[in-house]
Image (cartoon, one colour):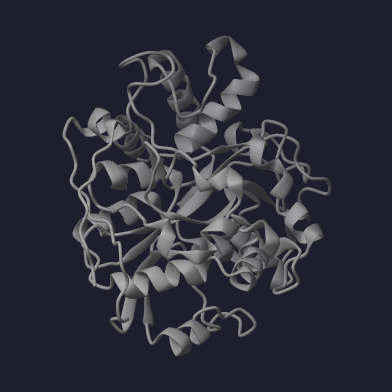
Length: 385
């Protein structure tokens, strides 16, 4: 059965100006027979892409819950889908999760109903992108950096700076980077520009790529407008980016380890690196819609998502890090301590994780440019304005 519990948090009041009333499941009943999930590409695999990677089939057999997946390529797309409704769960990144909480689109999670919660990495259990005033609004899933993917025939040595995608130059093969690089088709890419400026224009005083005053924000937009002259495509579909690296002459771009792994498996000359400026990154959380029609199956999936063999195999498949550290070493899946280290398991503190920019920030009340400006201005950048 599904029992309701009203909750209010001061943080949400600050974001929305209202007191939210959210539902929390306090007791589970019989599975409804299905669960509908909005997920990033590659996150919910049933062996269709590669038969070695399937963490859906056995869950369906054991739980009686058929898993329906809607793939989304950007956080904004995920927020839009959850606003429309009709889904039970979403694998939200930090630049979407608090928007979903503030918008009353997701409900608090009762961790007592998730036995494997205790196995979650302590660095993630109370992470600010899914925890508000001590209330958990999701279950950690995967995390990792946004890497610089490059063509190893063009770059004999890994690029040491993100400048290869931000500034016009000749690459090591003697040809210009103009028309041979890509950028992410999402306003959160402004943070990548801001992080680059943190290293190259310290006089701007940027301390967080997600907290930008007007001058810092203008500098980031100016850098992105210059980048616009170099970019062959703004990517948001992982598989289109893969095809562009294979067939369209793209040689460098910010990317996810998922694309890198698939291209390598296909024998393509690609590799990835985190340049000297560091990287933004994502820590994704499985969150439950406030009006989920299948809460019992949703909770069963959230528990299943923390199984160390699923976490282990997904980490290898996506090139990411499990939210359950034991998945690296317990031998229940494909991950090893070495593979987790290679995926950046030890670099948690070096990654600036995606979060939604708000105007009230560490620089002061109303000092930072809010996210709605990022959205409209980035559309202008892509459009050449």
